[in-house]
Length: 472
Image 1 (cartoon, rainbow, N blue to C red):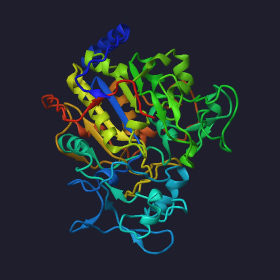
Image 2: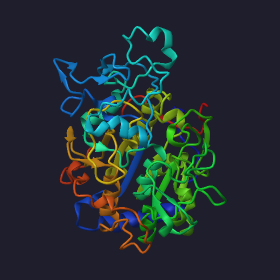
Image 3: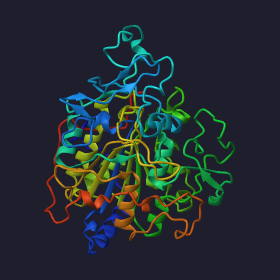
Image 4: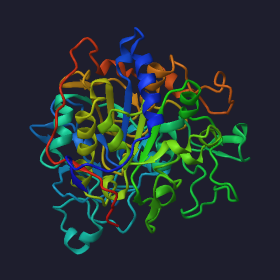
């Protein structure tokens, strides 16, 4: 990693730049104030619950407390009492199980009481004051720990100066791969036949996964797998000529299938299909000739500097900077600050909305029971921050939201409200519902004041720029 001011010698794509500029000019000419946003950038980090990062943030729906002491207490699995949330100053965390089955046990019918119950039997230490900790400290669970401004000052600064969402839930109550599939396509499925969307069936736990992962009983094996035959958002963007890019940091990513067990790190790059980089597995991306839009992260910094950001951007980290335990919180915060600084320093800042979030709860405690919208979700609360020159200042959004709201905002901004809907998009698949139209889903427009003068950049200290190397 290098300091923010360091130049990166890469050549931007002239074709992409021209297309983006033309789209931006056309987009800005329309009357709806949402179109002041010509670039949506989704930064998705890993494995943190809302209470774990913002449970003590003033004004937010955080950890219930009286006189500063948490009033909630999660029972120990051995019935020897309970554990209250506690401040955890450690930069390295471990977290806990966070697959689909774990989510059901954690939520416990709305009691939010299973955060310790889902831990494996080898975990017997649940808080620093526990006398058993000295004997088994390498295996100590920290799922009841939380951070505050002392550990994550930049995240708290963004939340204080822009918009913090305190009811943003995972789209699906599951682990990384289903989350990332929902982020780009609003569904997680398995397809019995290659390239046949009608053969796909709902699968919140075990979608067809990349070949590097431990096999599972439900996995469909064979050549051409994984194959994501259903419709994704890039299909609609491509049809309307809306530019997009999915920027991927090269390095490794840590998950095994379902997060059930530890396994060797898996190599990740823009060219490798993975649980944080699912778009290369979608038929639509390949058929539309847009695999080239899945790019190395270094190209993001070039586009931000040159004012050639595409209209829709997703950014995926590698393990070291992802905040996925045991990656350091500080490394993730520095990397994210660097991404935001790059946008703020560039020509596109005045027309950009940044949505910063985390993909799932990572096993960490949260006290709010998620609403049930269908058989897939919602999942457990995660942090969400909106950063934009049009973002409301110091606003806490209490709407019920999920990551589906990002897709809805993009569709409203760039596609005239068209949805990923098998009844209208020309690619029928048997998905259970159109998630962007769920009645309880809030509208991200509430986080913006499009009448205000665009706010100046707010460059924070400690930001870093990825230089192409990841420590393994």
